Length: 214
Image (tube, rainbow, N blue to C red; front, side, top):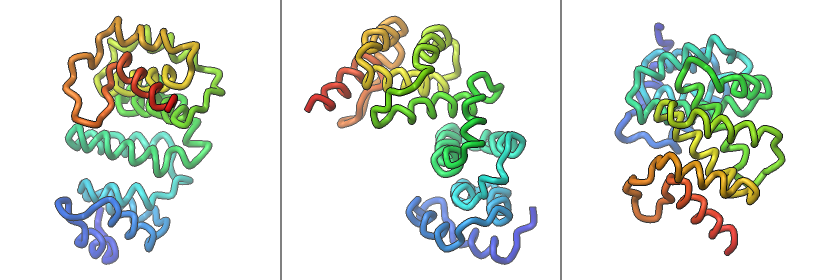
């Protein structure tokens, strides 16, 4: 896609090594919403330009076909950048629209690994602040117990994290969530950086519950 003079000017100010996320948000605030400009910046394939593009997309113009195209493009990035771009898309666009949330909720069995990860990560996000009023918790746990170990690593992490949030906030499911970690051994042997919470469910839940009791 040919860049307009405005898109070229913005693109030339973005440097992968020195531009920070805060800088992108500052730029986005001055642009506000500009879907055409976003698509031009996206077409560059540049990681930082694509993050800026996500901030200024018009979510009213996002549908499954457009998201599939973004998803395909994201897969050309390295694994770390893939996760960052998709999480950035969740936080800044996909959860800002009831229509797009409906799409997220349909992605549990999507052929796209990234979209399946979004489904599970969204379920975890719903529970971050202790909201336990969800009718699908039992269903989610059954799906995790059945499918966790057969999923791709990116999706496994989000499924595991959802179980962690359920176990943290809902005492009646806590032992069951701990048992998932014990039976799978997932992340048990991971080396965790100092001051970071391990992903191994028995440890994650114990640490997070202890925080709640303080």
